[in-house]
Structure formats: structure tokens, C-alpha cells
Length: 169
Image (cartoon, rainbow, N blue to C red; front, side, top):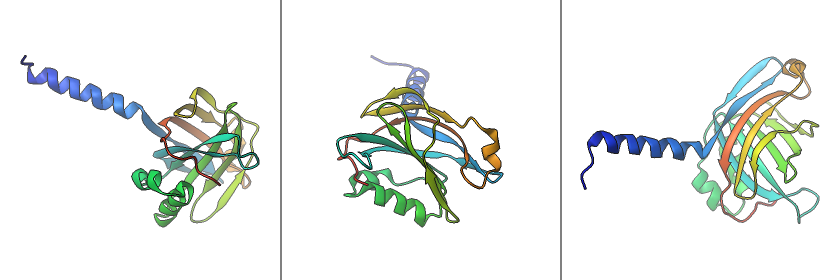
């Protein structure tokens, strides 16, 4: 069967658009009045800090891309990911999300600073299991944009979680 080239081109573009929808994440972090655009994202699973039986999904947003093939193949995915981002002098945000959707820890890291802590705010999740995470996280307090302690976050994500051995922290 012969299809016109335009039909094949539209089909290829549609397939490409659908593929991109499965791995996207971006946003902004504002700290002390300075906004940083985060154009890359990656998600992985790891054991909870205090209970190895519980799993967290970690979403990392960054200003520079990571070589995810190397990250996924590494024995220590966390170390590989943070090493790559640090070598590129990237700014990145780590958000650890529990199965119930609560944020266990939220941090911003850059060549100038590293700061993390807990937050009472929750992301809006449309999907959250061991294979995929989708949602948004928007800080509620605009005053956090100028804060020395903490930051203001506006994050969006729709990411597959690689089928690798969960990372240990």
C-alpha cells in the first residue's frame, strides 16, 4: 500500500510529539529575587531516608541536561546525576515525593549554594506510581521569591521513571 509523503510526514510528526509528551519537565526557581529557568528534568526512585521499605520518587529539574543513559546504567544513579550536573556548573532543584504525594524534601543546588528542607506544600499530581510521575508544583507564598531562606518554585513535569534498581541515598 502506498501512502502520500504528506501522510507519512504527519504521522512521523505526531509520533514524535507523542514521544516528547512522555518525558518533559521544566520550570523556574526564584531565590533572593533571581529567577533561574530549569529546562531539563529527570526522575528516579530511591529508598526513603528513614525507612528502606518506603520508596520516594525524586524529580530533578536542571539548567543543563544530564546523560541519562549513563545515569541509568550507573551503580549509584544519585552520585552520577549530581556529578554530571556539578561538572557543568548547573543549577538544579531536587523534589522528593512520597507515595501519598507529600514532599519529603525540596532543595535547590548551584555552584554558589546548596539548600534543602521540608515544605508543607504538596504538588498537584495527575499520575504517581513506580513507572511514571506527572504534575505541577507551585509555591503559595510570593514572598519566598525574595527570601534568603527558602525559594519560590514553579515546576511542571511528566516523566517516565527508568526501570532500574532503586537508588540508595
